[in-house]
Amino acid sequence: MKKRLFFVSSSFLILGLTFGVGIFAKSSNITYAANTLMGSNDQAIAIGGTTDGLAPNATTSPYTVSGNGNVIVFTSSATNFPGAGGAYGLYAYNIKTNTTVRVDVSSSGVTANGPITGTAIASETGRYVTWMSNATNLIDGTTLSSSDYFIYKHDTQTNTTSLVDDEPNGLGQNKDKDLAISNDGRFVLVASRYIANGYPYSYGIALGDTASGTLSWSSLAKGNDNEGSNNGTDVNGSMSCDGSFVVYNEVGPTVKLLDLRRGGTATIATASAASVSPAISCDGRYVLYATQNRTDITPTPTGMDSYMHLVRYDRVTGERIYVDSDSSGTFSTAHYSYSSSVQPQANAFTASVADTGDVVFKYNGYMYLKHLSDGSGTLESIGITTSGSYLNITGGQITQDGRYVWMYGDPYNFGLASSPSTQQIIRIKTNL
Image: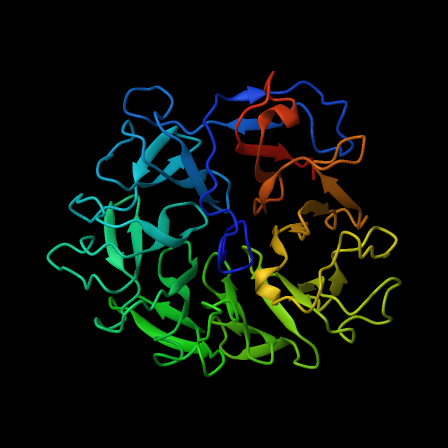
């Protein structure tokens, strides 16, 4: 994520989204849709792996999809999932194996006594899941403070759960936010009030390393000196899948790249203008960030304004490309930017970049795919009908290989159901 997530922002915009679970369904070619993505490879993905082989007997709320596109992390109160019980349930569903495992359990199988209260993050393959909760009973032999919030990590292969957020008890509602976890579970990236900044100051970025067998923390960036009401939205970060590269923004705001292979930190975007919400590809080559800086790329393209625009930076070649413009390099402020007077992370680009360099992003309610791997630079609208109206879709994540885009929407609007239904997970093949 690296944050293998639907959002660059540290808070998921789709939390609480509930959709009914349908069956796998393939569409015929969809003639009413203007975008070329929709077609016979579209699917509405059903959550399976229940104990009785039937559909879940309660709705599910999705959080994220693993970078390889095989594992969906979701919450549900359904009673026919493995390990179901109590009032809460965080699960991981493997599409390839059609299996579901309960995540919010202790190593001995005790179910959480508190709900997930923030984000949930999956590693590249979905083996590891981290999440924030005020549950106090997920570390066997220990009862945590009921006044605090914690970040937990669960290994779906060994069925073990450990504590990531090691804030001292008694500090109150710290509410650290998990941002990313490496594919081997070694590194975790969080936005923290205590670890990075020194309680009770504003959130900062902290990197945790479990190589020594215990969790050791490094503070990468600090937020402002007062916590206010931003709840950690003034800092953000992302990590490559193997944990080698971390991108983050700090007060300035600037965007920086930490290289854990060779050591050292490089500034990707300077503080001459606001640059925020960085995300990095799974392989660590490409970095996305939203910026008001007009000196990163020259000459300034036609139609640029004072609003935020989205840049893709190639760490290998040094090339920078504006993503939110059409193939001719033209910008349209009607769809592609938002007011800089709004706090960036509260109205940020929700974006992800594949290892191919192709980008899926969304702002002002519309979703786009930027074709960059083929050199065309074509900007493709996702979910637009021939009449020009946009389908009601949320989320948006491209898999690391660039082959699929994930989102949430009514299967009927995609030609995947015969009548209007509730929102489900939709997977579209990109043909990239």
